[in-house]
Length: 348
Image 1 (cartoon, rainbow, N blue to C red):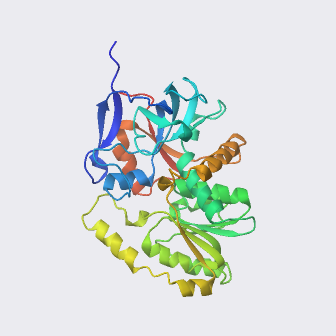
Image 2 (cartoon, helix red, strand yellow):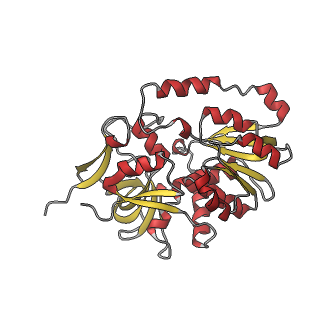
Image 3 (cartoon, one colour):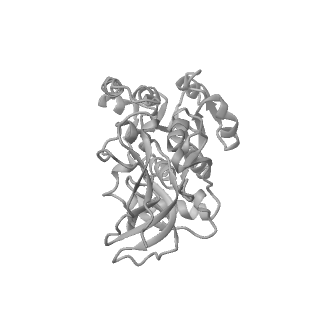
């Protein structure tokens, strides 16, 4: 009996959402130490959008299949794998290739999912919550009673960070478009700021009586980084982890040069930083493949909290896999509140 070809979403050239296309290929081989997963849901992240646009450091050569997280069912296991069996439900970090009906993943990057948790829900967990957790606790050392400013608070990482901050007992401030403010306030955000209409630095300083905040998570880009730094309190930390503000619907040829100019324009001089008692980190989850210990520890804690009902991934919308282009456009237009997924369960 001939095996059915596997459907994948492929980037064949860099550009806007329309460069994503459905292709077919053979079932992936399962190498020693790997687990073959039938994908139910693949999470969409800005790393996928940047890969599509040719702006993601370390992305594979084209043609390439984006996707760095999936949730699904084990189909087969390679030699040396004993912790999971075919038929079990799992989530996985995939290091590209996740936009696929099947994907082979190293066993270390796979975790089983309790029957009490839906795969749809758990698909919204790995990348966004790991990113938020590692920035907030491993880098930012956020504690109860401290304050945090979350930029793009209504996005995938943003809503995860808001939940984790609330769980910690920190005071939460967030920037987002005005249409998202009501929901963010329901989640426990004390101050919502529309950065398209307001000076977020001034609002933060006014609200904190000139002190600033203890931690800022900023994925907006170079022009925001400089401003965010100004809103830090003494001993405060800025964590930079993206350039979302620099990403439009299409990949203009000038975009990389514009981004480079903005990066070079930032000046974080060491002596003034010492005088201000402030710190800066850069974070990139996709570059921790050879330093997985903190990632694994964070994922175990997050899965425990998920099982206990202490965190609840917000799934904004699920697109069928063949509408990946519409899903990318939806996120780039900042329409989502929480996570967006691709559904591979019913492959046409």
